[in-house]
Length: 394
Ligand code: LCS
Image 1 (spheres, rainbow, N blue to C red):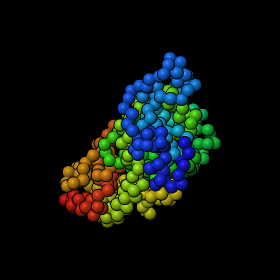
Image 2: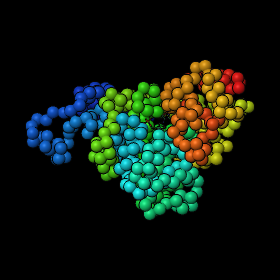
Image 3: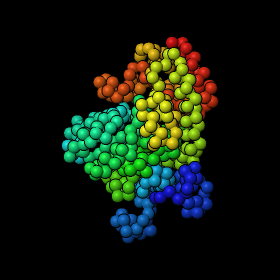
Image 4: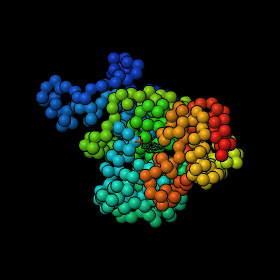
């Protein structure tokens, strides 16, 4: 579904939903039903054969979930969106649909821990070979493409190192070889970055994060061209079955309405905290996409509207210092999710990326001193006061 509204701020509220088809209900009703009845046996046959459009069973489609799917397709400028029970359900449905045994996947040098875990399982069970690359140059991307490369799978910004990948450059090369590029857009949300507009083929979100925005739902989304998304809908979504519940879809539709307002505030707060963190003697390297001293600053400026709400930084010290820093925090919560109204902080080496073997973790740039901060919507001065007092105790 193409975006119908000129501005993103209007589209997040209005796209994908027509209240006139829902008895004038201002908010989309929650269709809490497992199945749908048919007027006749023949109608059931027509629905299942695809001759007649309509709902049959909520694993195959649900009107509340459809509103979210259409809204997200519009926001990412894709043809069809699909909703899943988690971000990992979306990642696995897309990757399994795109690959077969003995294929090759080229990945960004860092990935969320469970995505890495899924790929490691596919490597072991289906002999799919993996290559990890920082994709810093065209030569690097080209040199890693093989005849059996089935997918290029990219996170940017990468969780948790905040390194960036030039999506336009990767998409251009992938087109030459006819390889689909899948982008996990969780850290940016469609408000800050639109991979399909940059030539990529499929966008994935852990909707658990900025799309929901309130830390109360687990969900996933995938958006892309109709032909491919129809295939996912009919195979790895329908038959593997990691579908979204109507209530979770309703929460995400509600969360989306404030996405631009929340994102602006996340970004503003992050920019203030970035300067404070960089000036603190207990803090080493700080990683943020729109920091002018960042290695990937020009990519960040080119493809992200703003720098986002995530900052990673090194504690000058040991793993123990990093853990003590977290323990000293007063109101900032230690927790592994991100993109919520509350500021959340975590230690990737022992939490989100603990499943990644030591050697791979080091290669990804995840040190024992690395801290990942999901900047919330509180007053930035309060967030800094808490961070500073915890740093000062080291
Ligand atoms: N992709 C990215 C970039 C993620 O950060 C996550 C979850 C997922 C996919 C999977 O989504 P889920 O199934 O959890 O909805 N990231 C998490 C994190 O950094 N901490 O806790 C979960």
